[in-house]
Image 1 (cartoon, rainbow, N blue to C red):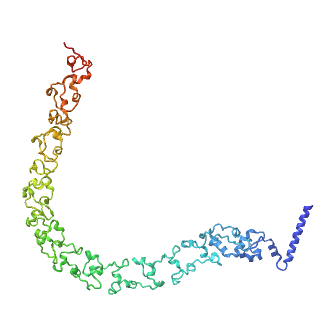
Image 2 (image 1 turned 120 degrees about the horizontal axis):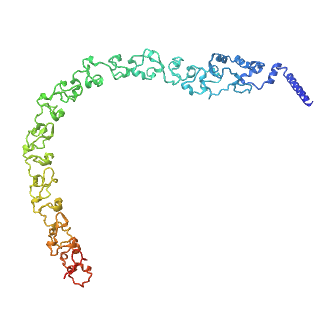
Image 3 (image 1 turned 135 degrees about the horizontal axis):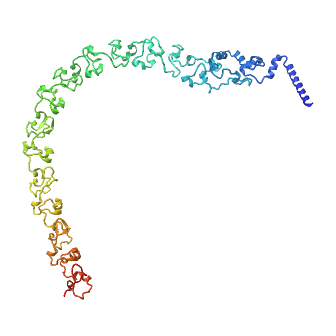
Length: 594
């Protein structure tokens, strides 16, 4: 009962409210618009504010699907894009079949942005103007100005780049004929389609070099129009520059000099035209060598003007003169000698002396002592390398080390060839370690291969033949002063420091020692003493009995007891004649005699 009452009261309250509202707006609106305002979910955006007066502009009662069609009734350009598949709405795949309100939401307030556009995510490739080159980096506001719809932004270059146009509109507005979006300054204009194709150096020249002040039509095409300041001929050759010059290189000409009667060969082919032609030069240019090379003529005119007889255009300094025709063929080192070395001033006189001494006086180390027949020893191949036969012409065969030494080593100044001494001592006096004590017969011991090596002296012919260890000893081991003759033949004179007896045994070392080995003795105890070594005595060392190395200790007693007193078991009870019972083979072997 109470629930029914409540529902009834609500209906009454709503009816009263509607009635009051209708009464209040009766004078200002129709009943339908008043109701529409009442049920509207929110205010429309500023763009659609006029449609608030008539909901039917965008809505159809009980037909939600009709809304997009009503949008298209106003937005006819969008309808055309979708049907023609142009513009963003016609190209973007998500638009086809979609309701407008899925992207453009209304009734959310006056200041609402119903476009729903996010510039950072917008893909311009789905428009009629994909961004390429430098346009990709431009901010949206750079092209889309306030108050102009996005779709109506200008697409021609001139609309945006009017202030960038260096041509100031003189070339029209079809900028794309020459420029592209990748680089404004890089152009693709085909100059070949004009009356002046760009060839050679012209192809790399900036446009402004020829087209001054942005004037493109009527530009002069004659070389002289642009290159008047470059004309080294100052107009004397006319204006037909192309007859010699090309667009590839202005300084490099293609003029055929052969047509002038003076063919350019050798060095002439590489020199600049101005070297022969130009201000200050004869006109026409001379065709003779002397006409240009008078200042280069080292002969000062003495040899006439037929330069080509000796010189060529390839190299002025390299001559083709045949010297054999003069009677003096250039052989050996003469063939490489510069002409001026022999043909000296004045003006390279051409009849110099033909004898060696005529040119080589200063080179004559003999100072004229050997006359002027230099070729007897010397050859033109090498002045210092001679072919003198020392054996045949001097009577002194150069053997061994003599064959390799320089002539001046023996033939010294100031008289280098005046019969030097032929004895060894004549040249080697300073080298003689014997100081002349052995005479001048050096050849008896020394050879000419080496002064110090392979000495062939035979010691057998002296009073002291080399035996044993002496044979391997160096000469200097015994001959300290190299006087040789002053050395004693006594052992003690050389071996005083080796004498363990310190002279107490005298100087007759050979009685015991031999030259093969100092420690190997030759002393015969049986023959040289009265005590024969028998039995155990034969194997004893000398020092076992001879305890001292003095001469006195060598003469010891032959009695047994003198050595064996400590070995005597009898302690002298049986006397000192041990040999009556004992023998030298074994002390313990007793043989008692009667």
